[in-house]
Image 1 (cartoon, each protein chain N blue to C red):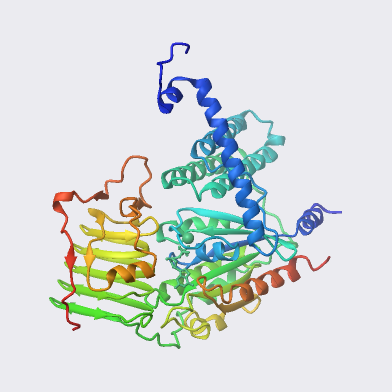
Image 2 (cartoon, chains in turn blue, green):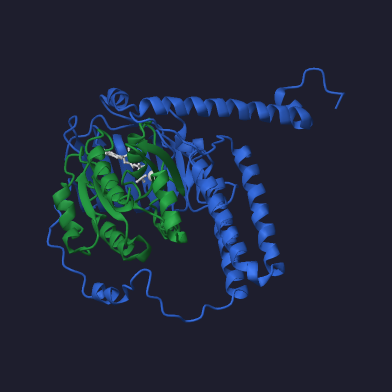
Length: 347
Length: 185
Ligand SMILES: Nc1nc2c(ncn2[C@@H]2O[C@H](COP(=O)(O)OP(=O)(O)O)[C@@H](O)[C@H]2O)c(=O)[nH]1
Ligand SMILES: [Mg+2]
């Protein structure tokens, strides 16, 4: 590695020189460690009681992955040894493996807040596969339990199950209707909210409608829409979308969750990563709504900044590292452009 | 001394309490955990899988497991039932449409034998939202009075945004668990 190019960019140098790479990694590790301990002390100070996290935290995906894979191979080899283990020692050996798998699970849990979702899901899958292998081995190798009377331990509660099985009790409480728009076809529906007038709002069971919500709401629920266009001002909590088809949404919100969407376009401004589940053919683009006062409303709700999160979509059902086939970025030449709804009259 | 009492003793000494936070997705579990830990709640991404937070509360160490609530991962919940001392069931009191779903999932959870010994705190979250149901109304919808008489439970209204009600809820939970587990101290 002596023949390094004169002025290598950092990446090139790192790529080509394992020693440098190692050094760089350990520096990163030191830094993240320092960052973490500082974070810990800040948290400690912030929480009235002294809060601390005794377990190690890496904040680096590669550090996590290497630790995960080391532990995993150790579990693998323990599993391989099962067949060679003296039957008398088999039970403790299996218990040991089970404990190692739990440790592995804890490792994922403790680090899942910074890991990319692909890593979390695939690690969870690995763990569940290890559990399965262990269960199969136990079933195969351990002698079947003999039937015995036990006078200690948990009382059986089986008969109770039956009781619970009877007719589900009628709810004695009638849930009030939340403010919203329901059961419409082929209409344009406009609502203007004055500040903090509205908490949650529901849009449900619409066909071929255009919905325009101006002003901010705390929570928005969208349910069963077909062939609709929905334009909304800022939502300070979350938007929960379920069961929509062939729709266009233009929304700004702190959090957006999309379930069961088919062939829809989403133009979003969002502070956290949007998530999709059970969806396909959904496309994403940046927010593009305009009406009188929207700038100020966005500022007041901390949604004035373009975070680019509209493109950081997590597909919770897509396990692999490659791009999920269920969503894509809407090509620029197919986007609608700025939508101005200033002149809308409340309907 | 039997093995069991040794284990109990170790456990008591550590004064560790393990708490499982569950509820439908979007109910506010992650925000609540961040809030009681004094962390920033201005950007919360939906949880994939789970998070663990360890924090000191009074003289106890709370180990809080925050598990994702999406339909597709509810089946993973069972992996966390072992050794759970306290169960926190979080309800989005403004999500009227999914209250049925919420009741059904809670009923299923409470059938779980491994959880039969754990105290149950129901947090009627998002009380700051206009139109949210009150804790009393949530209790009726979930038919809590019909619950197994041996279960220790309580329902508290709260808001992860304002922080209101969270301490009241966790105080009750921790006291209830402590008086059960550490009673021999
Ligand atoms: N208005 C209001 N919104 C809340 C409250 N708690 C959580 N939220 C919002 O509800 C959404 C879901 O919260 P999150 O903690 O991710 O829910 P989880 O899926 O149960 O973990 C987020 O947008 C939060 O900002 C609350 O007490 N009041
Ligand atoms: Mg969460």
